[in-house]
Amino acid sequence: MSKIIDAKGLACPEPVILTKKALEQKDDVTVIVDDDIAVGNIKRLGVKLGRVVSIEKKEGGISHIHISGTAEAGKKQAAEKGTDTLHYESCSPAALVVAVSSDRMGRGNDELGYVLIRSFIHTLLTLNPLPDTIIFYNTGVKLAARDSEVIDDLMQLEEAGVSILVCGTCTNYFGISDALGAGCISNMYDIAGTMAGAGRMITP
Image 1: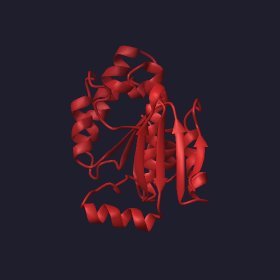
Image 2: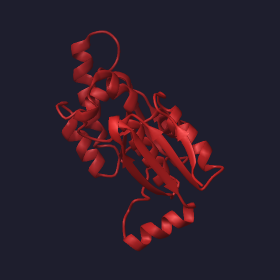
Image 3: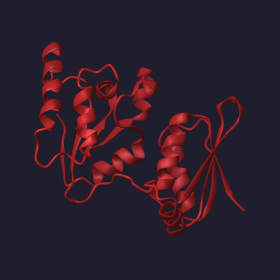
């Protein structure tokens, strides 16, 4: 029998944390949420853990996320389908993580700060090796929007294998969740875990 978690109305990253705890005890979990970002975050968690994930949309913006099977079963299913559904970026102890908390670089003149952050993002393309992960949070998430002046650079970084995590709470706050041009909507559970696992971290 599936363990049911009612996570409606809970703020990030609580739905993900509750789901992870439940999956440590049960192989069959159903999570009820009323937020699309929570749906994406929980789905990625299930994929990361190698489980089988299905999502059922209900009326009123409610979603039921069913996560089942052991990690071994999830890997087997992905292999049989020939998919890459188990791919999930994570940090090794030697990983380089760039954490961008603002759409400006440094304190002082805002116009200069915007010029500097654009130059910084562009310069990341020249690093060897490239960063493993770039995290955007607070006003930094605006840089990952489709109309951002650095979106082409971010898309090139992503195509080169750089994982880009964008804080979902922040995109919700600024009303740009549907305007993301690069990266994936993430949550504080993943962001904190990525930072904690970083070998080196740069904060411009």
